[in-house]
Length: 492
Image (cartoon, rainbow, N blue to C red; front, side):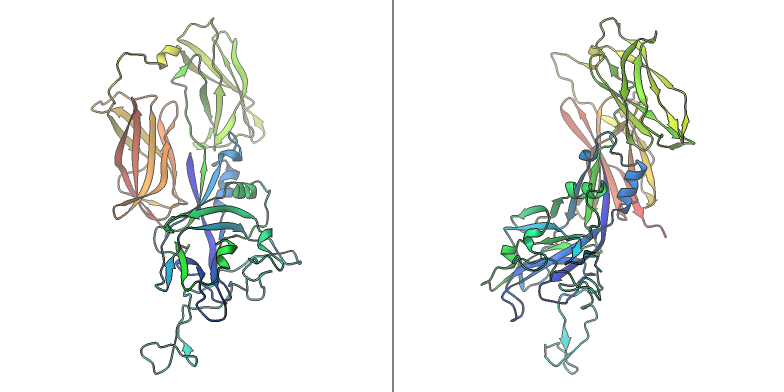
């Protein structure tokens, strides 16, 4: 499984009963409880955001992220935001609460106008006013404002742009009245927070897949908010809040949508066993570039005298220019192993031109070759690694896609390469002594002649990155720390 990150295109926090805009604030504070003024019995805020899915859609259209083998069911999407706790001493940390992820309604009132909205340029939650002769900043009803980071320009609780209002104040009504009652809203996911210091991790899989397949159109964003029961709570003398980094943070913790997809390649051409399913791949390389064919080719497996052992079999697009076929177990009792067999790929067309069949050979190995039966367990093996594709301490421009090759050998051996082992990689950054996962443990691809993985820098935040490796052997998992260290830098 690989990952793709999509980031926010805009965000803002709506404060109940207020024209305040905080679109440029580096964090959002979601609060409920006592009002900070005397006009309302309770106060609350809602966070709104939209996602830039352009790169994700482009990768799907070009086949770099392919659904050919798994469909969209093999793709997941999670919204992730890092908790900041609270920034206001007047507010207590909220605990034991739920947050809802809600789709912004498409249309405005009875007009059917899409509810597009602007982020705004505000930063502060409060308008700090000072008198002309007051050096200490005391509040006064007759003062002027010198708080340049405070703004009432839309969007806010009432307005989505300078000349258009939300169809309902605050986007929806928590008392189920007006054009947009809460009961009419589409709740995408709900997350429970026991202690109030947890990070946001909403499951948006069905929501985003519906957008990608055209089932949901015209979407203008989402809302994160407390349930109506908390927004409407009265009788409290305190205000409770939880904070998360927004898209304008200057830290590494910019919120994002994490898309995971299955592009794992496990080529059995060198270890093709009888009496078990095996996978084979066809690599379509045109002028040195992996390129999609017009359609998926089909495959048959034949012996040396052209007897069909399996097929015809349909292939599927695994990633750009790579086609996968799963060959069912070959169980024929008339075949003596080891022996040479052939995979024949047909139906190959490129730009409307039919190409001749591709015929490859492989060795069908006896079943027992891949099984080790012994009265004693084996000692775990130590490994050594060489790499290509990323250099140690290299500075990589964030427009690159790197193929990182991993050469795996037995430790203290110069030429004993290992052909079929379980190898995983992990990519992370460091914040002090804390390791922050960018990509969790993921299997390293195994082709017939190399181990490798693809690393796309285009959706990664500039920072210093580390890669660890993990190898499983005889029930043990050995982790090899900081095998590669490199930096991603902005292109100027």
